Amino acid sequence: MEKMKNIKIHMILCHGDFMSARQHTMNFFAETMLLNYDKVEVVEDKSCSAANSLFWSHIESGISQNKKLVEVYLRELEDAGCRRIADLGNIEPGYPSKVLHILAHLMDGFIGIDSVFYNLPEDSHWLSEALCSKIKAEPASYWLLQVRASFQALDDAVLVHK
Image (cartoon, rainbow, N blue to C red; front, side, top):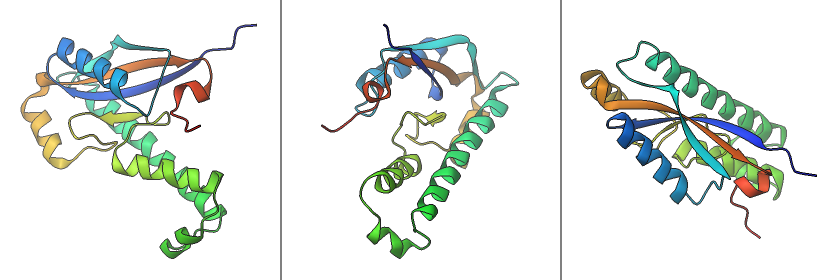
């Protein structure tokens, strides 16, 4: 019996025209050590440049979803007994420490399977004011690409230390 395929959607911000942004994105997914999908494709009709009226609402939606993930992981850490920064020194190994690890990746800019919006120019899950200004000054030079990635099993998609 064939395993069911899992689908993950990422929204990737890139600089350049559509073709160079697509190539940069495909190279990024091919070279990243943190994700290992069976198939990665850019969905052209769901992608748009900053000149498109939907661009900023898609960016806001992706960042909002990333923030919700941060809130979920913070609640999980609180449930594990971490209420203050000092409590992190006593976090139990296993799932609680993995939650902290995932949360650190969301904050520091390493893409993960949970990432919704990812900003390649800044290697970040967020968007700085400086880059917002650049995008507004050159809207045709920035693209938000929808990436559809699939994998057979979660352990196959995520880098797992064995």
